[in-house]
Length: 221
Image 1 (spheres, rainbow, N blue to C red):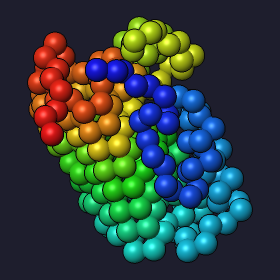
Image 2 (image 1 turned 90 degrees about the horizontal axis):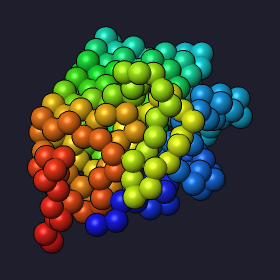
Image 3 (image 1 turned 30 degrees about the vertical axis):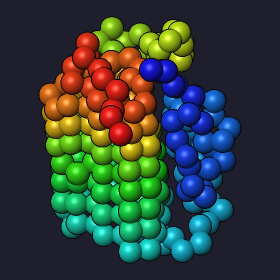
């Protein structure tokens, strides 16, 4: 089971306004410090079929936003996305199409590709979530180590990121069960599922089922 960590191994980005960022980033966490500037640049240039909700916030077609949701600038919300009651978008958030940002979920400085679901009581900070990624109720991306030191990605080799804050990197089709904690710098591979109430760290291979951190099995087709 190979522990993939490169952007091209984890994601297939078909979101036009994100594709260049993904193509130029060898590792997904390299995108995190660039999110705010990318959003501001896109807003300044203007985006066809997007409208200004308020200063610094663009929304696509058919976006549904509950009255009690809060969206702070800068942010770009893709077509068909639903933002449910009590959701808190703290700025520097950019999504693809048809995502769900659910009740009482909090997002900041993160990227969601198409059809991502963070539907119930989730925290997603300094993270990248791939196409069709799903986080179960109450699962969170912890993004800061208790000692405040820079985050190291623990894969087949150790990768120094130079960043103090990295949450979860969820590849396309990754599925995290209810009540999970993704420790800082966790990478979950494509089409991998994590059992509920699991504390995850390090790099988890693609095509697996995580029953516990020391009990990872290949998914049977």
